[in-house]
Amino acid sequence: MSFNMFLLAMSLTAVVVFFALYHIDAGYGKFYHHSWGPAINNKTGWMLMETPVFVAMLLLWLFSPRRADPVRFAFLLIFELHYFQRSFIFPLLIKGRSKMPLSIIAMGIMFNSLNALMQGGWIFYISPEEMYPLSWFADPRFIAGTLMFAAGMFINLQSDNIIRHLRKPGDNKHYLPKGGMFRYVTSANYLGELMEWIGFAILTWSWSGAVFALWTFANLCPRAARIYEHYKAEFGDELDTRRVKRMIPFIY
Image (cartoon, rainbow, N blue to C red; front, side, top):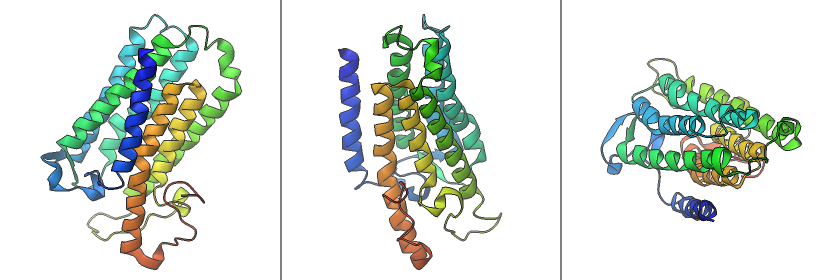
């Protein structure tokens, strides 16, 4: 019962965050603002913010009596694949000298720690022991979810790569991202991340995964809308608003 209340509280908080972020710009990246308080190097900020969930999930698996379960171990590998890239590779590839406020980092660490408890708690401790037999690897939910996760991660990585190479060294001009899924949305990297966690919710067939997917949508959708308006103002007719949407192709 307490875990269900935890999931409910996380879901309700996601709804509040969703509406709040349509009125408040999270002050990092292109929307960095000194009003968010002291800031540090963006690379260090991303590492500090993302590493806790990678470590916490690993520890939850390590101390679990179900750590030898092959299906649950597969869930761990899929989850950690994303966060290894996000914690240790993505930050090193960041270009520029942008900053991240310590307040944003603290909120990120808090959410990531709660999410580790949410995902790891369900997978390694709370889910019925017989829920994930070896036959789960052949289950349509595992196959479809894994394929969706993989497609989302590909889109995420491809989009990040496109953004990193928009400018040559010494060039300070701003460019509209093009190619890949940027043909359809202005925040293709967010689309990819959303696909990843919807896929994870499907492959684990869990409410904890669904709540994480909800949080991903609640956090990224308002920012995608803000980026869309920013690009419209900066690039005008270069952005084909009839064809290119914000985060979900053909829809939003």
